Length: 550
Ligand code: ADP
Image 1 (cartoon, rainbow, N blue to C red):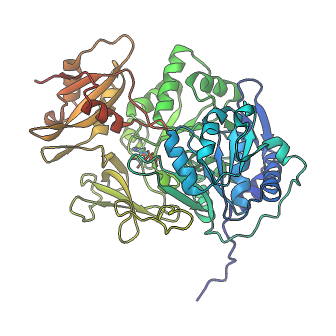
Image 2 (spheres, protein in one colour; image 1 turned 45 degrees about the horizontal axis):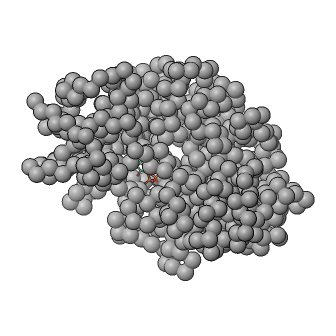
Image 3 (cartoon, rainbow, N blue to C red; image 1 turned 135 degrees about the vertical axis):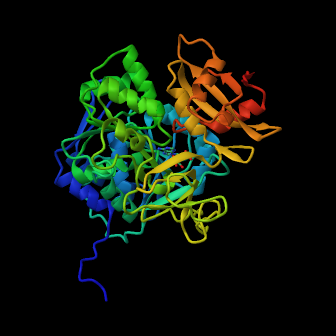
């Protein structure tokens, strides 16, 4: 027997329609380095409709076509976020920090027909165009040196000229909710990048969850600053969630350095922000050097890689900002777990929960698979690889225009769960603690050493600005940890002291013997520690290593 309920497809166009009418007065402010650009949600809705008409009528974009964006976080990117999926095409956000060969591979794999590009990014795009045969149109958004496009094969358009004069409403098609809405490639730390294709339904449900207090739970009294790029898993879903609840948005455009971020927080007074740990570390240092009024910020979400507890505590103690730790990945849209403490716990009692990766929302089911392939108990001790399933979790990767979806067995279990590649434990009350990525864990003499735990301890030491611990080959133990540290300005090298400090916090057999001082921990295209690069530097003999024993 079926229900008697209406079957309304969960479409991105419903989010747009709702936000641009019910919350039509909410604002999107884009930082420009000069006078900020301001638009209401109603204007964003009208301009999204104009963009959709222009793409459809002038550029011949049809349902199912991929339209790429190579853009910073700004109002026009938000217009593309809505126009492209709502008209039935697929928004493909390109990560502007990827190595160019990967960028070319990704555009060709997705067979994007159009690319919307910020003028400031033309020096990146223009030289690649001869290698991008599927691109027929380049739409330039904002100022930039368009002479770089002289003589290129695709037709070149100015965004504002293109959309001008088109109707400000659009009869958005009533699509099947399982239709592709957006795609995002993982950065491809191993092998070719892999395309995750989100559906209207998955994005809609993900937005609803983001808006619960259990997750992020912003209201229309909030202004959100998504520092996390719109090309990094849809800015963690914030733009869509914000349109559901009328949250004002402050878009940082390309001004992602600590100084301008502090300046825009002081000037525009956001109440909420989201970014990876490295951005927050930079901001903390900036605020020490050049104090600013950041008192408007009440909550921030830190995720994308393990957040050092010391960083969370510093923000709270010195700036009164509540930092919430969250876990997710491109394949999970990205909302996975969020670390709110259990009911009734505050202060020091809450910290053990807050520094964990948190609890899963109802729609994300977790399980832990141990090295023997068996499911592990949730006892807070038994470690295993985290697998998840749910309505906004990927079931496969994009296989190309004519290809079948890809289900590599290291990423998808035979019964359809996503294998996250993250290793950790789950407590009886459902809190996830990740100890490592499977590929970063240090396997020493048959035991596992958590690189993340050691890094967190090291980064709490006053002499250390950043620390990465990686596995290096060892004749006797198979692998041993190498600690690569970035010292704070006035600190002197004292490996024995650091080792003793660590010795009070982790088991003696885990203590690194190999130490190296580096100027910066190498980072990936989205600002995470790139341990692969560090391991390669060690293997190539590029690191100056000191051995310290007992
Ligand atoms: P990439 O593989 O390029 O880093 P993602 O952005 O999808 O792509 O990264 C997802 C991964 O980031 C997760 O599998 C996990 O290893 C790591 N991660 C994300 N959030 C956290 C967190 N809060 N703590 C620890 N690791 C995290």
